Image 1 (cartoon, one colour):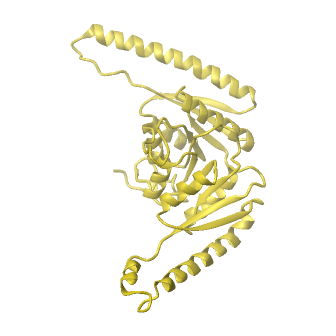
Image 2 (spheres, rainbow, N blue to C red):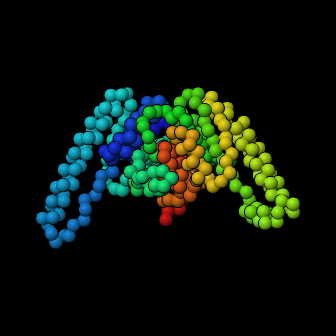
Image 3 (cartoon, rainbow, N blue to C red):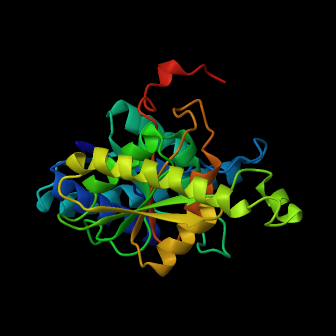
Length: 309
C-alpha cells in the first residue's frame, strides 16, 4: 500500500517528469503527495567584500521568490486534480532534504528525476538522484520516460532473497491491472568451473555442473512463483533464467524486451546515516534506460537500527 509519496521538485524538466509520475501514482493509490524543493545555499563570498556579499544575497532571495511562485502554481494544479498535496521547501543538499522529509512524513515512496545520461555506454546518474538513493529511508523510484501511469511492462530482478520478493510485490503496486510481470534471475557457474574445460569433457563433464546449477535455479524459481502468485493481485509472473553477470543481464533484457520499469532490491543498510547501496542495484540504476524502482529491505526506514557514522 502506498499512502504517502515524496517527490523531488527542482523545477527542471527531469524534475517535472518525476512530479508528473508522482501525481499519477497518487491518483491511482489515493496517496498524499509532498513536493520537496531543496533550496540552493548562497555561494560563499569573501567576507571582506560586502558589495559582492550583498549582491549574492539579493540574487538568492530573488531566486527563492521565483521558485516559491512556481511551486505554488504547480501545487494548485495538482490539488485541482484531487490530490492531497503540500510543499516542503528548505535549504540543503537535495538528497538529504528529500530523505529528511520522507522520514518526517513516514513516506512509502520517494520519486525523483535524474539529470544523468543513461544507457549501457553512459553511466553517470545525476548527483541529486544518486544522493537520494544513498540516503533514502524507503523505496525510491528513479523516473525516466513518459509519466504515463501505471507501468505496463515491469521487469523484476530476482535473487530469491526476501528483498527480491518485496520488489515483486512493490512492482505489482505500480503495474497496470492484469499486466504480466517479468522476472529475471542471472545465474553463473560456480567459481572454478572453468577449470573443468582444461581437463576435457571425457575426464570431467562440465555440462553436468551446468545442468545441476540450472536444475537448482529452476526449482527456486518455481517455488517463488507458487509463493508469490497469491500476493501479486492477478499479475502473471514469468521468470527468465539468464546466464551471465546480473547487471548486464538485467539491463540488456530491459532494453531488448521494451520494459518500462526495472524493480530491484538492495541489501545495503538504509537510512540517513548508512549510505551503501548494493552494487548490483546501483549499477542497474546507472545503466538503465527506463525507470528503476529501488526496493529496500524490510526495516530500511528504521534508522534507529543503524549506528550513526
